[in-house]
Image 1 (cartoon, rainbow, N blue to C red):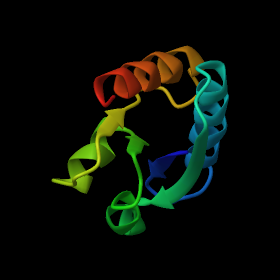
Image 2 (image 1 turned 60 degrees about the vertical axis):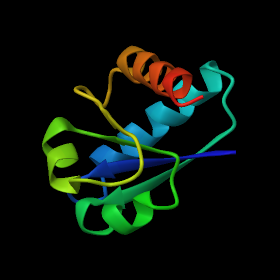
Image 3 (image 1 turned 90 degrees about the vertical axis):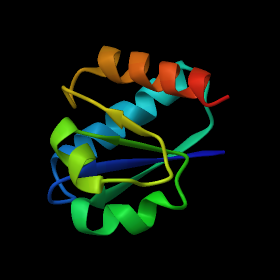
Image 4 (image 1 turned 30 degrees about the vertical axis):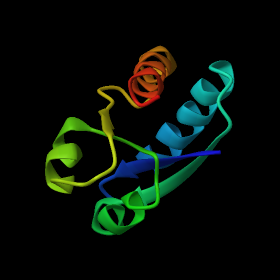
Length: 94
């Protein structure tokens, strides 16, 4: 099972939207994925056990150098964008 971390600034609200859309995208792509939510302060630690991190460009810069692939999502409510980026990330990471 793939573990995806949805990261937003406060860990509530926007990350829940991102989590729901990421789950929907994973399902459409046929991925067995567990999507978890984290705020920026706990994301660095949580990312060490995740296979992929979904977040905004601003927060991706704050995460800095982490070993987990980070996918930047411009619009957390755009399920097409999330699907496309999730698909590309899975393809590039085997």
